[in-house]
Image 1 (tube, one colour):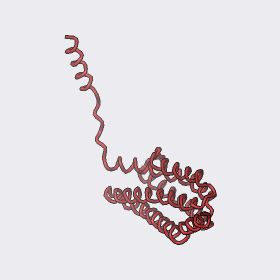
Image 2 (image 1 turned 120 degrees about the vertical axis):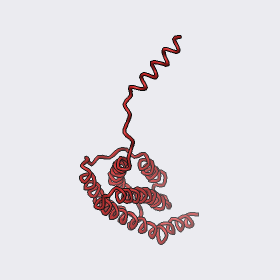
Image 3 (image 1 turned 90 degrees about the vertical axis):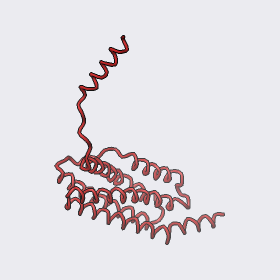
Length: 188
């Protein structure tokens, strides 16, 4: 009999719970915007460390250039938050934390090693690919949500991220990876 009373109480308690409104695409858009806002601010703090660690002046220059671009990208995100009437606030992004932790590990484990710049470049491209994925998704959602001004701002950032990825690929294949391999052969 005690079990039956317990079940009734549980059913009554469950019936009293307020139902949460279903999550909409606009909610997902806002949450993803917070995610990339956190990521961009984390990147602004991380890129100068990578530039300082880089042995190649060209790679350091690419990182420094991207810091300035990223600051502009954060300003665009601020504009989008304003359009939404929401405070510009990030939420911790475990993906970008993991990627930047890997970059920090490369800086530590490969310090002064021939492959340091190749590792830094790979870590930077992992960041770029994450950003490209996020901005492409956000742009599409902005279009679907009838937010053409936000879509335009997101597309501008997506274009910059793709250009940075292209620059890093060019650096990797024309200089950085070749130098790392050459230095390895000379050391062997």
